[in-house]
Amino acid sequence: MRHVRKTIGQSLGIIALSAALAFGVNAMRPDGLPLANAASKSSVQLDSAAGEISIKDAAMLFITNRAVFLDARSQLEYEMGHVKGAISLPPREFASQFQDVKPLLAGKEAVITYCDGERCPLSINLAKHLRDAGVKNVYVLKNGWTLWKAEKLPVEAGGKGGAGMSRLPGALAGKTQEGICRDCEN
Image (cartoon, rainbow, N blue to C red):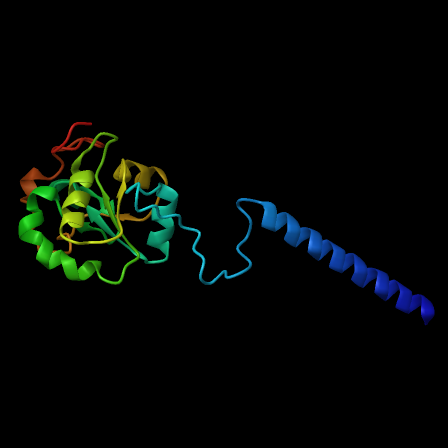
């Protein structure tokens, strides 16, 4: 009996030492698991000063339904394919469409604008319009459409853009090339 107690005591000591070592290593790692306050701490890093968001963080916000995505490309490009659930809001239509879109932005952690191409200014211009209109937590996903597709994240085609905008004539469909933005320089 004494031998059994000693074995159980040693086993519990080894388990306790292993757990303490594991928690210590996890606490020291920059990418450690969030064990304390896990419910209140988000793995998404939003830097409002920078105004940009990484594809990783945008995807996490998409998966958890904590963001609204606004497609700044033309309606034609939007209909050819866009982030699933995104709303079409080209900057040149901001003044006429914003009041329809504004209620859809409420209650989300982030509003993410995107277009296509590294030098595409449309998402930056749309973000500026949104901030000027008082919208908080606006982020730009640079080269968003290309990155989104490259990561094989959910996409869809067609649709009215979510703001009541009409579809373009079918004769115009397919007139743009992949990765080419009609309204900006790529």
